[in-house]
Length: 168
Image (cartoon, rainbow, N blue to C red; front, top):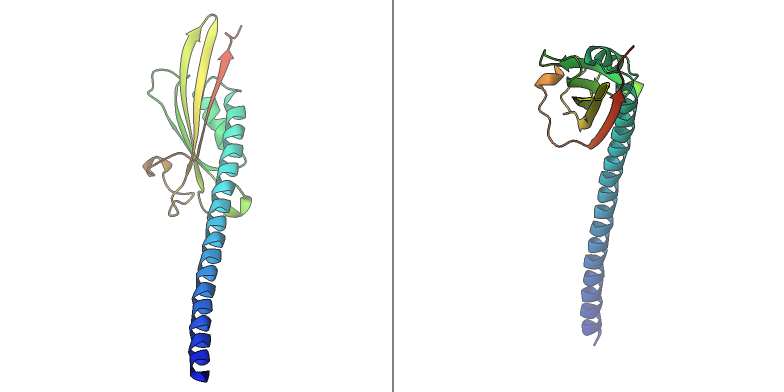
């Protein structure tokens, strides 16, 4: 009789141990997913703030050369490159390497891409900016040529437009 109780106790103990291992595994997975979602949320928040700051700057200039200088002067930008087709100064593309915190100045954390299309409208020009924020690869640094970095899916995209009247 004691032998049957001993076997039942051992089986019950083994079952509880397996249940404990399963619970620990599930709890660990929950914490790992939580950390992953937290990192994604922080990255999206930083990308939105960078895109909004870039949109504010882009709404001040019609000339892409002057806009590229203003983008280069933005607080978070560590490198900048202006790409133009040469025909118009009101259209083109600006690529900028950016960080979010001053501690990250050595590493390029985000790539800001401003693609501007201009349409004559009345007495002026309507400029439409497509601002995309990309997560830079881990290997990217502030000295790298940002045009050589392959961009995949943007973290955040913002479309902004502004009418620039004719200067008189």
